[in-house]
Image (cartoon, rainbow, N blue to C red):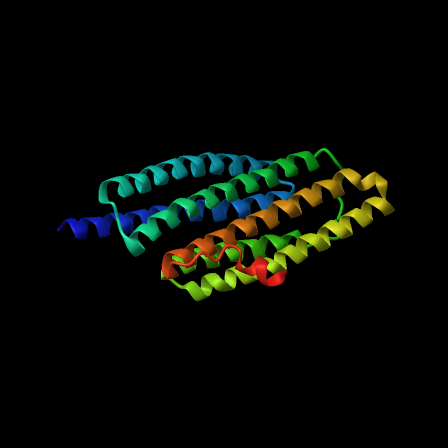
Length: 223
């Protein structure tokens, strides 16, 4: 009977984490839409969402630490709870990066709207897909899907480097557009960091399933 209760608590922990993930995904989508549409109202929504994310993070951490203390889980259950705590932190930081995009949006409203040579919508969609896939890997216990998320990180790194180079070139050619271009560089970096957190989530899913720490494998293979 106690074992059944423990498994129910683990299921509840997973449900809470999925709810947290939904908030973080919504934060990214709303922040990118706010930037693309120059929508001050959406910026306010992102701020409200961040408050909800911060509250959810505290509640989830408390639930996880209580399970660790009371149940003293072993093996895969222990790894799952540890992974939840780490994933929870990455989801909260995704909310922080989304707030960064909202702040960039408020700043850009002070300047004339221009078309920058960067596909921010594609970057936002790619980062969002990484988050969704990482969360799906958690939901399904699918380490191979988690592997694919980590591999996707290279592409958004390339997108960010391309955006950085193109926007610096724009500044050289049209110095009067420096505020808008610098703002775009920061938004691109926010999106790249969001993708990094999605990759971290995938890494923690792999740790839970396989019991393997793969944090540095990709970087080592590139050296």
